[in-house]
Length: 132
Image 1 (cartoon, rainbow, N blue to C red):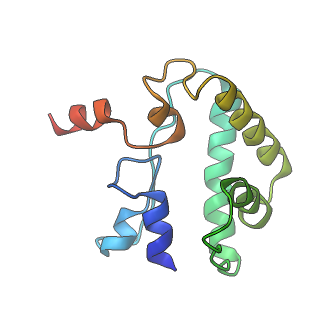
Image 2 (tube, rainbow, N blue to C red; image 1 turned 135 degrees about the vertical axis):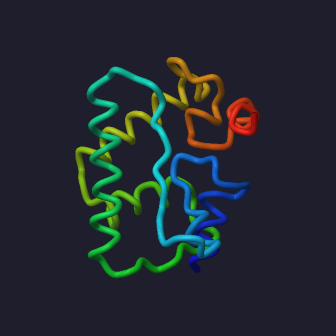
């Protein structure tokens, strides 16, 4: 279900790395990729761009996926994203390693102010700054 996907990805507003709220509201038929964390690391930037491009291109050309059963784990969903949508083993391997790195550091790495920023969630500090 389309609305279930939006709720899963953006359960409390639009301030996520992947913002699907415009699709939900009907305001405009767009998705928005928000800023990646600040970095000069070429590998991080290039993999993020490749991920975004693969997500858009493959989502446009492939048949819609079957919705996940509510009992499916986050690991299953992560693997399915790369197997059925992204279809790039190098990107899958990179983001699998990044997940492992983040989990070993409690989610907070580099210049991120909190685990929510690292994971693409809604950060209270950033939300307050946007409103001012």
